[in-house]
Image 1 (cartoon, helix red, strand yellow):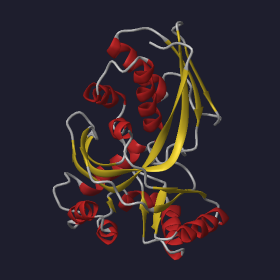
Image 2: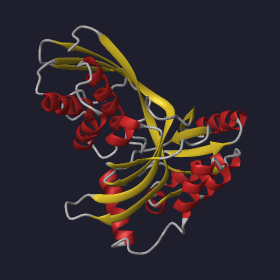
Image 3: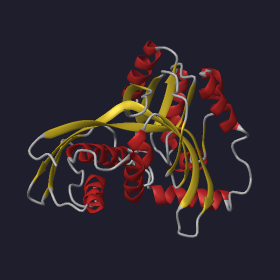
Image 4: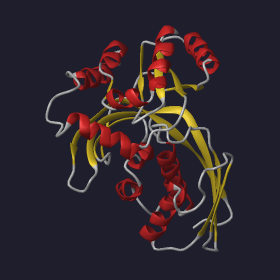
Length: 296
């Protein structure tokens, strides 16, 4: 165990190139099928261990919880339990990913925490054991731990690494209130019932072929998000942001996760820059980023 030495890591946001809900489980959770993609928009964490057992978390964004409700602390507690050791943790969190936006900011912070803790403890746990801890912390944490382009199934813990998505110019924008994930799932339940009918019109097969062949046109034609059909009704600005993206030259624009963030994919960086300017003028927060490969 390495005390009093700080290690830093980046916690990358994710977008959903594809997201479907396949069933509601008996435990109240849902099974999903999603192709998640890391993007270069990220938080940065610096962590130092101490021989005391206290936790301290300092964040640049006011209002971010610093107690056990933060997934960073939950991940730390789970890791301590897994290796059966006591230590204190001191974290500086520079947060750039918007919260409650469908971008997995909290999950990515937790995943980066796990990666750093394993390094500071001289890597006693292998990847399968780390992914087991990640699953206990949150549904998106396993994906955020490995990153890149991944097919996620079950609650999100069943991971199949895919061919890396080609480099793309992406704009992410958010406006208005966040969306409660439980409320979004409830709306999907009410709309689709037992999820027995097909909804994506075969898009995931197009997307998988597009990724395998690095065919951008196929990738674009395979994008899908089941939550758009229910969230846009309650958050009309989602549709407004999508229209702004498309009018600025986006090849596709859709919601990420259960929203309300919206991303657009552009073929040219200049188009992405113009879209960002237009979105900011319309009162949205907007960020330019690129697709990010898997975590080393």
